[in-house]
Image (cartoon, rainbow, N blue to C red; front, side, top):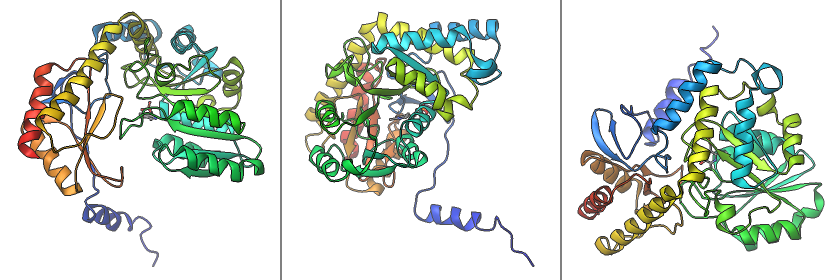
Length: 388
Ligand SMILES: *Cc1c(COP(=O)(O)O)cnc(C)c1O
């Protein structure tokens, strides 16, 4: 008798449960913001990527509603067939202007932007050097490309240089990939060194600005602007779904790069164009990022305030080094992190435990928003000082 080909699913799930790796969703029952209803309880939200508080902003909502009324709920096809609207091009021009790059291309998500871009730029004869802590989309894009992939230790520039010296000459093209703000740690990539090494070894450099766009740099252009490399020849990928409060992804770079991707990135060519609502909301957000620098100023004030409160009230605790709104309180074990995460939630604070295998060491991950108030930060630190 043939065996049930799906019979392996239940034991595999049981294994996931036994390892304490089982995950499930929690329902958010309000507009996104600094304070939300989560699974029936009001909590202060330290788990959102909505850094500037734009996702619930009525201007974005209105832009999405107006675009939906005018253009419908979907885009009906891929960009190269029936899916392209003037709105998409307007958004791409706005992103290029924010980034001060020659051009930009919007994808249906940041994940798809990385998959498509990496797979288009390198192939079997090529080499990818990747930071060990890179986002899943960079890792899977590298696998999809078929290129040889070598990881280097997190931000280990000497190791990167050594590996290039050893291997670069055996390959045609080389692409270095890195998060610019590392999503689980909050630290920044060493961009000046990366650019110098890329130049020395004739490598392309792709930086993933998902957590930096709208957040870092004087005009909100991201980590590249923060380090003073606006206009440098590199490839910037990002998302419309974090500080920009919408859904979608983008690549910004030279006109030739963007033109090439329009012809060669499978995750752009063979997928439905961004919906009118998402496109219009992101466009409104890019304008607000440029017109309201005070949001970024308030966000960076909140980061400084939280760091000071932790130093004062939690003298024995250490925040991982971070220059972004992602701040992590390092803890000894996964069990401790989970226990603290649960107690915080019971106290009305949503700051999740992040643990292996997602990250090498357990922590409470705090992401700050421009819309957090001093009382929110104070309540977080008061509770942490009781619990740790
Ligand atoms: C969130 C994120 C992505 C994916 O972006 P989506 O638009 O959510 O698909 C890619 N890279 C990094 C570093 C991210 O944090």
